[in-house]
Amino acid sequence: MSITTYTDVQDAGLLPGQIYSEELAASIRTGYNADTVVLPAGFGCVKGTNQGEVILPSGAGTFMGIIKLPFSLEKRTGYSLDTAGRFGYPVNYETAYVNQGVIAVYVDDTVAEGNPVYLNHTASTSVVGAFRNDANTANAQLVDGAKFLSGAVGTASSLAIALVSINAA
Image (cartoon, rainbow, N blue to C red; front, side):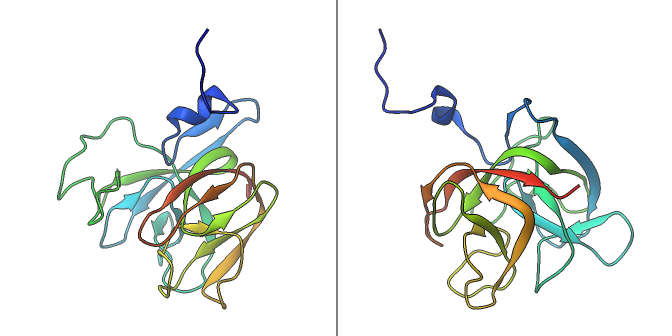
């Protein structure tokens, strides 16, 4: 019999932006990456200036969802990898995001199961687009209808992965 230290075998292979379970029907929407950077999977996105546009937050904005892991893109520097090597959707590309369901996200703080979910929108000691469990001195906005389903310990220099249940549809 195999021995692991994981409480749930699925936790061993979590990827940012991965839909964790189909038990709760995930609501996947699409938008257009109108930002000037790659939109990394597992980050939050907000509404852009025009209809259908999504971008990373740059101040409190209209939360759209969590960027879903892309399956049909080549993982390549200068195309689908951001400056930190995180995989996501290229600039000017159709982008899938989840606004209802259970999904793996990047966190840059210590979070615990049941904590509220906040999206970092202003760079301070945090990573813009990553999640945490507090307002970070008004540098993060509450994501209504979301809570952490797992704990993780992340920092701005070493992001961790946690599960979030979201119902922002």
